[in-house]
Image (cartoon, protein in one colour):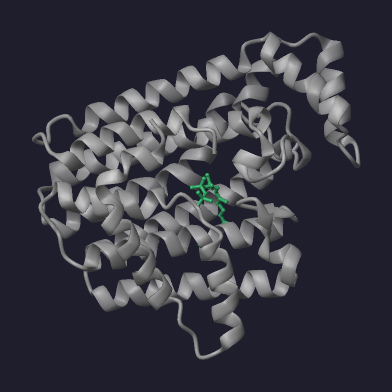
Length: 324
Ligand code: GRG
């Protein structure tokens, strides 16, 4: 099922979320506001804020703060994308020119800071110290994950364990926070908060694993960025790690030379994709993603049946079947 189909019962909430975010991006400096709106209006699946809203409702909370805290998480995510696109010198984001490509690195970093500051204002305005702690802990981990990833750049000895730590830090922990704060808003027990956190963490792992497979296999028009970007940026992700573990010395040499090359041409990318395919790198990546999805689903089984629970279970399936 597509995310759009899963979220049909949540159409009104999605419109409300867009309205709340737009409102929160008002700035006294018109240029800041127009850059921020360019980024937000360019789409994005809004998976993280929707998780906050769904988890809050699962826990009986239907108030406005679910939208504000969901927006806070989406703003942290957007800040990290803006900074990441500068670090990676990315040209495209969500199928459109990235902010750094359009306005340069200074604007991209500073508008990223603006998103981050708005997120902080939302947290202090909300006033719940527990939510503040969950989100700021997640941002710290996210930043550490990004730095850890840089230290492993181009390292063909990157282990599966290293890789899993990186994706947990840079992606899964923010998913976990998005879900847990829904539980905090609903005032549920520590056990139930932990269950939501587990759901988000495992979902985030599956999400990033699928992302790393899609980086090689997706259609650019659908995924919103070019194929093989991870390899071009020297990122050693799980499909490649699996292939490296089984490759011949000649194949490893080819992968190493391609990583060192100033420009990765289409033929080299295709050859590396074929090597990954030959050693089941994509299949194994998806199998691991399915394992995490299974754990995510298990984590929320104790919650009573509801529309929100069904949607969360469907989202767990979506993250591994998605093509964007
Ligand atoms: C300033 C808060 C802050 C952090 C700085 C740069 C950095 C530290 C972290 C970057 C971490 C990063 C880019 C992780 C990738 C996460 C990821 C899977 C992004 C794609 O998410 P989607 O598919 O994107 O949900 P859309 O476009 O749908 O929103």
